[in-house]
Picture 1 (cartoon, one colour):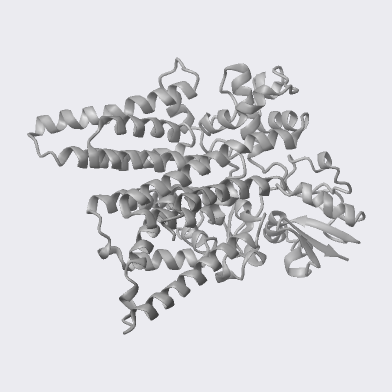
Picture 2 (tube, rainbow, N blue to C red):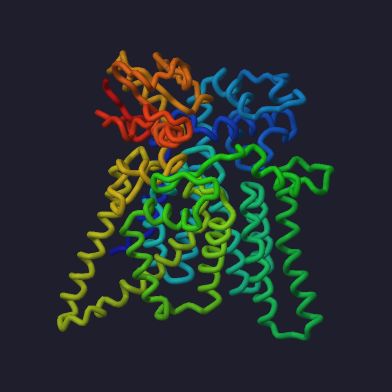
Length: 530
């Protein structure tokens, strides 16, 4: 039955990949990074210069802002934050975004990221089907369609899903070349590598893995060393040249040959010295080696973790070559390892480029399990099939339910290991929980509770634009010491107030320890009554 209606199921699942984030995104005001990314991209188109936000390559910003070119927008090319000697992407973005119809700009801007996610879903299905069979393709796409971490970050103008999409497709075409030796696949791989490198600088992590696979593909010919070297160089150039051309075009054909290296050097240029990371209620400037591992384990649905673990048990039984397995595990593990070692302990979203490879393998493992119904050793094969089918349906239902029940708050998803999203603030902060994006729903909440005072640490996101009143500046009259009435305080601020209470030696700042909230608005604001 699955095979008979497979095309229909694929279309439906790709529809889920697109429409769930699409409708979810309608609930949200700008997230923190969108204030920079979308306006910066628009400025690139209008000025022909990539001056703002150099710490991220331009492609995603160009793609997401492209629909804005067909709108009549208020754009000040002489804004000193854009054209002056001291440029400020955040101030420019704030001025541009909130002087226009913000929600309309966001709706059109976010569409590109959603389409990148659909593209990734399609290639996950395609690669899994070709490597493991059609059942694996469907299983992998199903796992991808309901992955909360993907849903969360495919509805905002950010770079992580685009990087995941283009890097995954890069390796897919390199794998196709290893199978069929057709040079066109090298060109395709190079084009998507260029898009990956043009999306986020962490794409460079994949470069050593790509070089390794090129070497393996060439070495398998077992020619003389000089011939092998020529083949290696030639094969590498067939990827490198298209990749460079894409980079060169997305940077508007710069005359400076070191344009990409200079961008890499600005990655942490705006990082605040002394910033403390947060994990499990503790703060540290140095972070934790296990931060990303724990973040992934508590922000990924348990059924997926179970399916991945079960698939590992069938590692030796998968009818694919060692090279095929390397194409799955090397990019996944190398990216996760380098990210864990080098990336700031800020968000699980930094691991998103590893997730498609996990999904690809899990789909293959599940397909093998599907074909091995008799592994339970029941005397009656029909009984074995029924038991395994029920188990699969239960886990699939749990997986879908865990994703859909938290709609539209996918950013705040946490699994049952930590008691769900309501306990997420005890473990992680920042874009693992909320990113300042919930001002529209906060306005609706205030409409029903007009006397409520609103305190938000995301000071560039303009709560007054959405008609929110009674906004208390963070340091105004020490509001936290003698509160009266109703207060809505954003989650990230509440988490950080724990640390401020220690550094300022002011116990009245630690509201999470002193008071119990009476309500919450989504997972972005907690409500207190005094």
